[in-house]
Length: 331
Image (cartoon, rainbow, N blue to C red; front, side):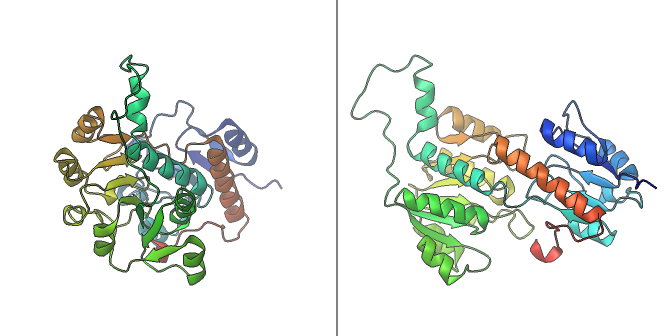
């Protein structure tokens, strides 16, 4: 007797090669028009699916999970962050949650380094000048940025991405400092020539560049609060490629408007896809660089993420522990 294929509902459009492979392996329902699902759509999906494959745009909260049918056994997230999923509620209902860690590390670290350079050297601003026909020729005092070599980089969150950023930043001559929930090994610190700060407050007050690379959890919501942002030097810049909720955007915007911060490079926003109007105004005034969540947006990353989703589903359906299972202790 042929084993019944699990019904897998995919909430967003994935790379063609991944969707084709899923169609071969599973009874799959795809989202061909790529429109983000409404809550009602997600509820209908969990009522019938054996496996749900959501993305960051899908809020899988207790209201959605309460409507899940008994056949829903796995939420195989397409992405590393799971702050849009009520993991505790899912596990309480016997639903396993997986993610796709590791495969987007290098791409996100690349984008973080790019944002540091873009803000410090005014790259985005300069890139607009030539096509807008505003360039009249070289001048020794025009559009001066800041040298990053010799500056102090404070990394908030020294996980995979934080460490990958540290490796890149060392090559640019930056001094590496970090704050993390747990201190990394002595061997890692030595390899990265990184200085650990137990006190986030003390680190922030002494850095030239701050990069946010920690996950969004209840404990990290507004970790860079209005009070902590005030500790930064007026010449400091902030880069965030993690989650927008980690920074108090309103407080940061006020400081940028008042020249109490030198600049910011943001790939994520507190209320995405909506962007704070104050940030938009600051971007038009060339005080911030804003990107539309491009951190992991490479062809290679999206393919690797899809392959991880497929592996997690296959392993789970074969009765084994999926390799990227999320546990409450990890959050």
